[in-house]
Image 1 (cartoon, helix red, strand yellow):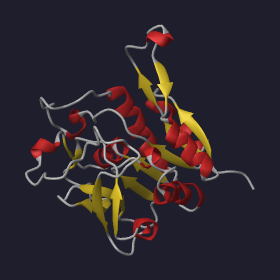
Image 2 (image 1 turned 45 degrees about the vertical axis):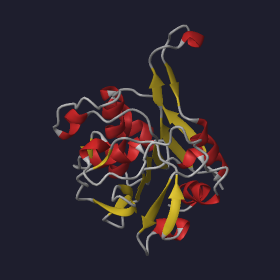
Image 3 (image 1 turned 180 degrees about the horizontal axis):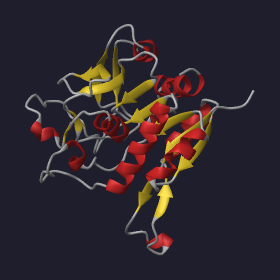
Length: 240
């Protein structure tokens, strides 16, 4: 039996690369590679490129995984950049949007992490808080620093009768590395987990025939120390 082929959208490091003679390089955090391998899948990295290539990339894999990284460009949801906005990459945004649309067109499962979940929401018509300072109810720490990423930072409440509840239970603790968050959720998505201050922490598709699971935290950083996080990879690779 062949192993599931998992396409992982890669990021690009643009500057301060003295070890690489200041040349940009393509990368994916090793935790994603290890998590997919441990789940029995074969990871294939998709370097940022022409959105027109999305069809061929998605055609060559069974499932799509979108990782974390830069802030999502606010022009994509018709907002001007706020002073709190971090680094963005419109090139990456456009390429990954094309990958999402193509995966949906080809009916292939999508698993998204942190920025990936935010970009998924924007792609499907939602909006973001450019910074949590825009959120009036903000009272939970959502940026791990200086806590070590292998440790959980805050609690989440998970909607019952969801796959995530089966994997995590209805109450769990997760790590957290973000200052942006879902504001208006896309109509085709539904929230399935929340932090104690009401920030959306996980989403799935409203249409049960469309296989989407997105989380706001980083399972790739804790999957070796927290079994429930590896279960996310196992489910995505083997079952989803």
